[in-house]
Length: 336
Ligand SMILES: C[S@@+](CC[C@H](N)C(=O)[O-])C[C@H]1O[C@@H](n2cnc3c(N)ncnc32)[C@H](O)[C@@H]1O
Image (cartoon, rainbow, N blue to C red):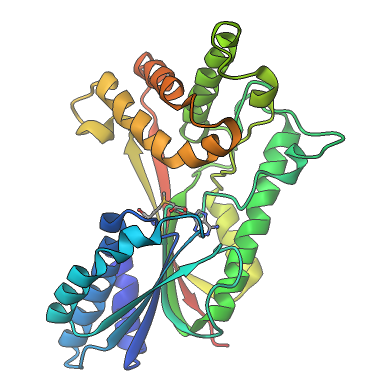
């Protein structure tokens, strides 16, 4: 929040149009999380205006996510939300913009502030090398990069991230005005090693849960081995230095701040009172929420309860203390 507020303070000082245009991209359809970000962003700008003795601007807010999400879940909350915002800051106008943030989704130089939280680690697709009909890469027994992955698997993921992130930056560079700000957070690595536990262990455990279901296949028919072998997660945690290098290479933005956060797995249940069974339950729900739609489209919904029950058991049985690593980047658009 401090980094987000800093970026907004600077925005309020330097640029102050009568209408401030904000985009929350990858906003999801959970009304609480989606509207929470907008509340924070508009409040910080309003506060800054009060400090500077200026009138609060009107806000035009774009909420973006993929076409498939249920925007109506958010829209239904808008009458109450708009009323509250109107009382606190003045007019706010909110629109939904469906589409992939890996391409253009807004008009040229139309945005003052872009916020993108916990989304850019999702790739636009599984790297194409895994889907080659003649000679597909097979990541046997795994669903993501792991310590035993061959370099070809690691490279395929890395290149897909580079292509996606570069398209993301190119698109936003056209859409953000000179001096505009962009703050994004994503799961990332603080090491060059592509297979640290903090990036791979949970995916290994989910792969293990899948394998157990495959082994049970003779009895239940739940998952066939071939189906499992062709499943890979469209996800990547980049090394923060590689993200910095891509920003530099694309050239339209200056990196203003980078903050790396580390939260122990057991932080999920209060931090210092370690209770791995409870941590595993929370993690099971979290990983299910993040992955359900992707797993569903490959395997159907039947496996879901059994898969995540097994995943939770595997995490509960491990006492390793690992951290979730996140990175927050704050960028400034150079002059057009
Ligand atoms: C973990 S949620 C984050 C939601 C919210 N920003 C937050 O911080 O709570 C990730 C969101 O990114 C969205 N997403 C993933 N890839 C996307 C893309 N290419 N374009 C737009 N949204 C995308 C997903 O649909 C999902 O709603």
